[in-house]
Each structure stands twice: as C-alpha cells, then as structure tokens.
Length: 138
Image 1: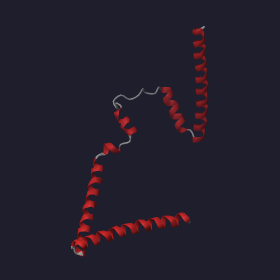
Image 2: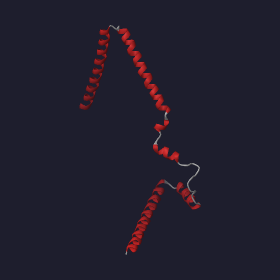
Image 3: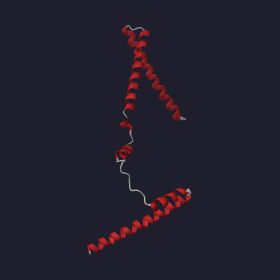
Image 4: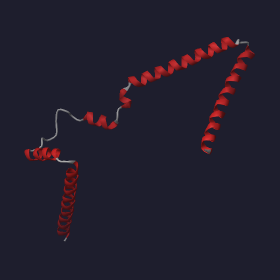
C-alpha cells in the first residue's frame, strides 16, 4: 500500500511540474504580448508537428526491416538453400516414421535410452583415446 501511495505521489509531482512548466510558458508568452488564443494555437501546431515527426520516424523504422531481423534468422538465410544436408538413409527414415507414431511418453523414454547409450559410447571413446595417448607416451 505504501508503494502505491508513493507511486501516486511521484505521478502527482510529475504532473505538477509539467503544469508548472506550462504555466510558466503561458506567463512568458503573455509578458511578450502574445494573446492566450494565439499561444494556444501555437502550442497545438507544435504538438501536431512533433506528432508528425514521431510518425515519420516510426514509418522510417518500419521501412528498414534489416535492423529488426533476428540475427539467428539472418545466419540461417546466409546458408546456401540449394545444397540441402545429407538425405537420411532408409533405416533412419523408418526410425523417424516409427518415432512419429509413438506416444509422447514412449518418445521421452526412447530419448533417455538414446542419451544414456550416447553417454556410455562417449565415455568409452574418451577412455580409448586416453589409452592410445598413454601407449604413445610410454
């Protein structure tokens, strides 16, 4: 509750400052001899001008899609689309089709089995590599 009150007080202080600044501008214009109606028209014209500039800047930003492109997508577009990756073998295609028909639970189970098999194979290959390294050093 204290944060909300502080936020309201800060918002009120900000609006007071803008009201105060606006009042000072009106007083300065009146001191120069500018009528209130003329001052108000100038303020509206200035507001419309700033709005038009903001819209033009937004339109300009929209016209430049290169800046807004995701870098990952840009990298993907740089690869040569005419050269696709290696085609899967008949066994791989059959495995993918079977996997597509599996329920999610079985897919996850298979994924865990494949991961553990891959980890074991990686550990074995690391050990073989260390053994070869030790044999060459000795």
